[in-house]
Length: 174
Image 1 (cartoon, rainbow, N blue to C red):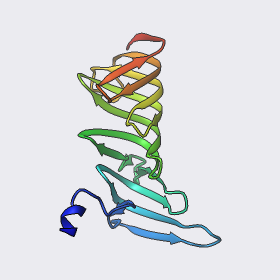
Image 2 (image 1 turned 180 degrees about the vertical axis):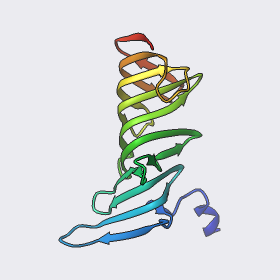
Image 3 (image 1 turned 135 degrees about the vertical axis):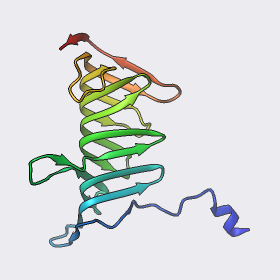
């Protein structure tokens, strides 16, 4: 009977990291509690999964920083990809606070209904809504879209239904 009551509760209050392909370095000097992960790292927390080539986790603040790395040719590889609630977000870098469930994201791309949403400066809120500045909404699937609607500021809400609200915007064609 006791174990049946625990089925709906998660015993995981901290993020679960996989082993890094390259190395893991711990820095607990001078009151710091930092862990650095290098090479194909993924972290799972609740229904959120984040993968990247480089991550650092601060145990004092509960903040995770993730980004890709450059290979020998200068190409960026292993950019952070967050999967949550059936949606996938690709980004340049992310700072995620596990306590507040807020994130600061740089250069994110995600599929929204029939289009693709690009954002330069993004803030993800605990209710899974997204606030962004310098955004683009397009149906062109190129890395640099040939045409898009330039959004100066936008908010993407998922609860109670999917909505995107934006401020001043204008069309841009190649």
